[in-house]
Every structure is written in structure tokens, then in C-alpha cells.
Length: 298
Image (cartoon, rainbow, N blue to C red; front, side):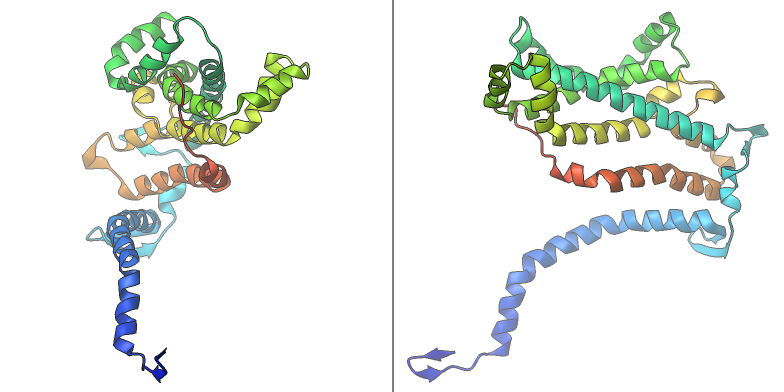
């Protein structure tokens, strides 16, 4: 470095302090992230080790390697002297429940969101105002009323019946999110299609829907994850072994704290996580592209 024709030597200490000052915000941010995420990472590591260990000394130190905890993949578990349903039956039921929920929620939410965004009809503003209020109702407050409705419709102990209940509870939020994405689509695109002779449905399907693919993708992902992790409604309204899901299956293993086999419980918990991880790996790009659309008009 030169000043007024004279060279000034660079002081190493000043350079170090300057670099430290620049990196201090990153150091603090990563430090906070490490402190908050390490406990979660350790819990998952414990889960993996516990599922493959023949014994855990003091609950932390694995002793020996064994696949005994994973025998539920090819044999049924006997718990309290009774044989539990097949894990594959529970897995299929969980996939059916999450898949049906996703299809119905996205289909209804997309149509309702478009109608609220583009169409003018009596009561539109009132519907928009009460949408979030409907979503705010906790599921547990509606259990008794839901039981009477499902029983009256002969849908008690039916996966499809619970799918309808879960869909009804999720639709308000889905509609609100999708409406925000439709609000961001320019009217000019629709007018261009209508001028070219396309019908309103054709314009919606071929021109508008492709513009809101990120919103549809994000809603689909969250719908599937919500259905896959659902417990309360399924635990309350599903009683037969033929309709049991993985969440209810895990609850049965923990119904008696004195008889819990933590090795088997850890293995089944990992098995429960695998579809979610696979689903996230294939959908993370769509999820990262999605941003919550702005609700610009009421």
C-alpha cells in the first residue's frame, strides 16, 4: 500500500481483525443454528442407532448389531398377547389417506381459489373474511359433531370418511393460498385467450393453471405431509385393524409405557420417516420455487 509516494506496511493484526469483523455475523448465525439443530440431529442419530442395536447400555451406548427390531417387515408384531396388523396394511392405508387428501384438497382448493380471485358473485367478500376463521377451528373441538355426522352417513371407521373430514378442515387455508397465486396472474393473459375464441374453462385450464404451478406444487406437498402425519382424526374415528394407519400403529405400541419395546419403536419410526424423506427429495425443487402469493384484492 502506498500513500504520498511512501509505502506503508500492512499490519497482519489489522487484517485479521478486519476479516473477523466481516465474518462475525456469519459466525453468530451458524453458531445459533448449530445450537438449535444439534439436539434434533442427536435425536435422529439415537433413533437410528437404537433401531439396529441389540441393546443400549444406559440408553445411550449401543451393544451389538441386530436386525431383530426390523422383523416387523416380514412378520406381524405380537403386543400384549395380541397380534397387531401387518405393517404393510398400515403403510398402504397411510398412503391411501394422504393421496386421497392431496387430490381432493388440491382439486377443490384450485377451483375455489380461482373463483374467489376472478369471479364476482354475492357473498364473495363475506366468504373471504370467514375463510381464515374456519381454518382456525381446532379439530378436537369438532370431534363430537364429526362423529355424529360420520355415523349418520355410515362412514364411521372408514378411511374415506376421515379423508372428507380432513379435506373440509384444510380447504379454507388451501383456498386462501391458491387465491394469492391467482391474484398474481395478469388479466391480460386471460383476455388474450378469450379474444382468440377460447372458452372460460379452456383459458383456465390451458393458460392460467400453468402460471400457478409453483402454488399447486407447494399446496400438494403440504397436503400430502399433513395427511401422512395425521393422528387425532384417525385415532378417533378408525377402530378396525383393516383401516389402521402408521400413526395409529405407533400409538398402539406405546399404549402401555411399561411394555414399550424401544428398539422396535425406533425401527418403525424410521420406517415411518422414509416415505416423507423420499417425497421431499423429489419435490424439494418445486417447493423451493414456490413463494406465498400476495392477496392483493378482496
